[in-house]
Image (tube, rainbow, N blue to C red):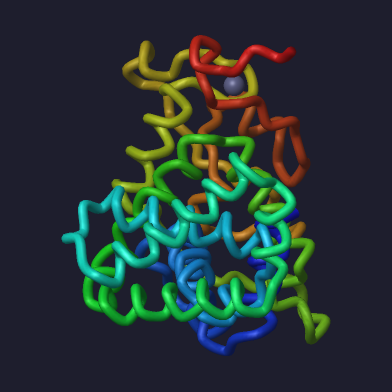
Length: 259
Ligand SMILES: [Zn+2]
């Protein structure tokens, strides 16, 4: 639901993604989702909006992210870190004071000042991290076929298929031929197997591999890679414009055991 809200806000709140999605996307919707989520994370609006413990957790994550990217230490970073340590100690020693402090105006104000000082200090570095974050984000999404399907569904639900003038769904991305890169990514994620019958298409030298829209185009599905999967010839012919269950693409050995 969080992603849904993020997406909805971006789609409805800004002009840019609307125009952007109607043009051919070079990197795909997952990459742009990563950019938007990153921008939201580093927005002062967010830091100001969050209160109490939420602000504290947010600043913890923020500091972790700066450190994860090995940014050089600075007075600004040290000040924020000191304050976070101080608040952490309150929690360990005197839980009541911890909440009182985080709910106080002074506490919130100080955290915000320290956050702003840090974002100003690392402005250039944060700009460089942005595309890296988006690439990693889209990489994670594209490996998970069910998550891709989920995002495709959200896009349809948001009503972002351009179907506002009764002429039927329009495509954001028009592609007559799938780029080789798209085919390679799909074959790799789907492990060369038909998503429906699981027959191994890499074992047959002549077997055609069909790129299928998980949500059919006629139902508002998009041409973006998040909506694509591979099917064998037979399954492709029987599927046509229907929906089918989308099985997970995550191998069993890395799936989390359910409790
Ligand atoms: Zn098949």
